Length: 322
Image (cartoon, rainbow, N blue to C red; front, side, top):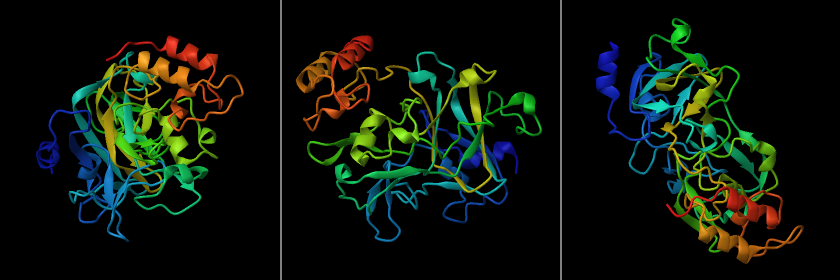
């Protein structure tokens, strides 16, 4: 089967931030199984999926990994067994854009999750679930290219391989919706084109409630972040993914340029008077206790209180309303 035929068969998504077409893949990925269909790597990352045991719809979250099919019947994941690969194309180039938050240009989503202390159902209170351990993950090796010529082994000059990481299906687990700790309920959809702060580590999440872990995402939907500044390319359109274990690919996203999230207390994509007012209302002073259920986001430096350093970060990140 030729590349042209592959593009014709698998291209099916309009211009958007997601990967648009599969152009090559291992012959074993014939699409006849639930997790071996290359087209599962295209389109938007999973937000909800049908639990294969209960039949109920679940939200993808920091402690619940997507699997099975979504509510439309689409397969959610592509599993790459050892040595298997898939090569996808973006219709629009993914650029090394200095305006992108944290310098991250590309996001790769899998089905990693943080280990929780309790079982989860669709109505579980995320404030009552504790993150006990690090992320369960099966790394996916990622390579990028402007031209997509060959593969990284046959045409190394055309590709940059992130051989030492970061990896797909790793930090940070997909989180599809914001969490409202006042209502103890799910809120609006998270932003799948906004990366998590790459300075965060597993240790920052262990011991938190799942709700607090979601707050650390600061409006992001997660995904492993890749900075094209580490490559020789100003932009890329092709991504090659492979695994040495059983790594999963859910989707890929082109990061949207814009606000980095410094000082964005209410996670609305800007830092303005509303954020300043929230810090003022929630102010605890150094070493004080954060009391308001909606005040977690005002702890901008993550030190367990809301003080002058948090005011400083609002000032530093000021953008005005957008």
